[in-house]
Length: 172
Figure 1 (spheres, rainbow, N blue to C red):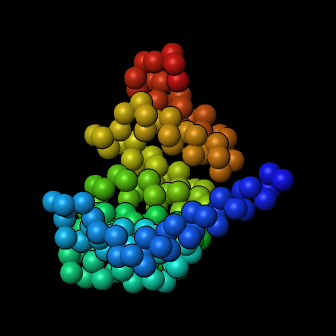
Figure 2: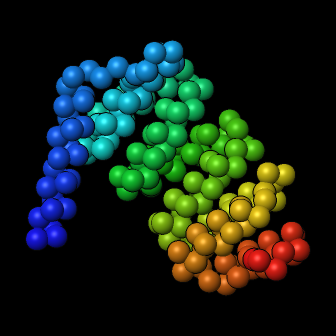
């Protein structure tokens, strides 16, 4: 019974997303012009149309290479579709070549490498994030828990202890 309800809910949400796409739902008034296309890309990704979502994000980025929403939408798409090796890692590496101080890109690149089993490189990238001026208590705990998730227990302990020492917090 529970499985039937879950399946019915998933089908209903998919149908709503398809109807919304077909109806050409418009972004709120005053929204940036690309907002409607970003919504289309998100909706396409939500119903499993990865190629369509990727094409929309790529078109937006071709017109406006600095569009952060399209860039991070593409990162999320590649990550959720399991395209780390062939698409996500090269995308993030290009980003870091242009913006070497982008700590979020380093976090995501580390996450992609950890998912593929390259824990040493992931840890190295995450330590670079912690060495940046933007690191805070949350950064140490986020990275520590990512390391635990990827069964990098020794590194997680090191990260959490470094955070505790850096902020002299007994909470960590």
